[in-house]
Amino acid sequence: MPQPQLKLIVPHVRRPKQRLTRFSRAIWQDTRALLREFRRPLLAIFFAIFVGGWLYGKLLALAGQNVPPYVDLPYFMLALMVLESPTDVPAEYYLVVFWYLQPAIGIYIVGQGAVDFIRLFFNRTERRSAWELAVAQTYRQHIVLIGVGHVGLRVARTLVQMGFEVVAIDEEDVNADADTELAQLDIPLVIGDARLTTIASNAGVQHARAVIICTSNDHVNLEITMRTRDLAPNARIVTRLWDARFAEQLKRFLDVEVMSASDLAAPAFAGSALNIEITQTLQVGGIDYSMIKLIIMSGSFMEGKTIDTLQDDEHVDIVLHGVGDNEPNVHPAGETLVQSGDTLVLFAPHSKITEIVSRNRPE
Image (cartoon, rainbow, N blue to C red; front, side, top):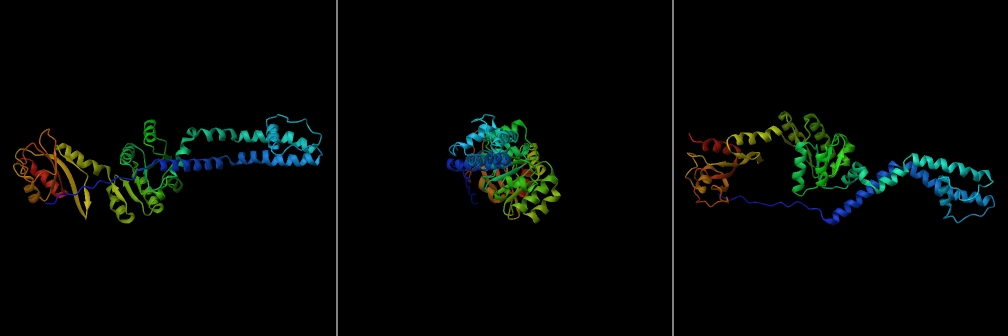
């Protein structure tokens, strides 16, 4: 029986140059957000200092007074804002107006948050949510993970260990432990309802290679799945569902991979009860395949047979053979004899696996 071929898939790893590019783009995105948020006070301070300074110089010339260099006029306006008179109070009423108008403009600007803008611009950690949103918008060909609960956090950890880039979405801020781990994994978190197009777009769903939806609410997962398919028609979508009734419909109509927590756990519980480790069933060409690790029982039909005999007679592939505490043999030789107490790892159609498990027990 031909031995299976193993293929190592090495995901794309982010290089320092890419990190620098992403960081630069994130700063630009975040700065644009800041400018939009504080655009009114910023426009007010621009007009008050520069346009007001230019106008003040024109009025000084009209009054027949010495006009200071135009580069100094913005300083004059700024000094008036903080109640510092750069010169004596003029006699002309149209110049005196600036002595009263500029302090009022200064109060308005401070009240509208210009000080906060400067502080937050240089201390972005105080705006972590906004900063992570800006970072998330720079990702391309990444994986979007929706729902950072117990399952979602484990999925995120595994994806990062595999070398993939991840952006997470959660409807509410996560607990401190999860937040710390996301930061350590370098995963930006977008806070909001993933059913909203704006939130999904902020996480880059439309640019993602895959979207994993694993909140604990079936109805929410269904709605997110449908909206995600509209936003990302070519992305691979994996959805967590408890209710198996929707699985076939989702697969057929939306081309979505559906995974049930109960289905995933059932083989593990059943196998553990029989001292067997069984993988989740894989479907290839319409046939379900599984891989199991089992210990040969005394009186088993496999006892005393060679690897080749078992593979040919049972139409399975034995990928590992272990004896006691010794190092196991991967793809053992065909003439190797199987004895009770040995450990075998088998790969075969799921129906054959269940039959072997049943026949492994002594009569």
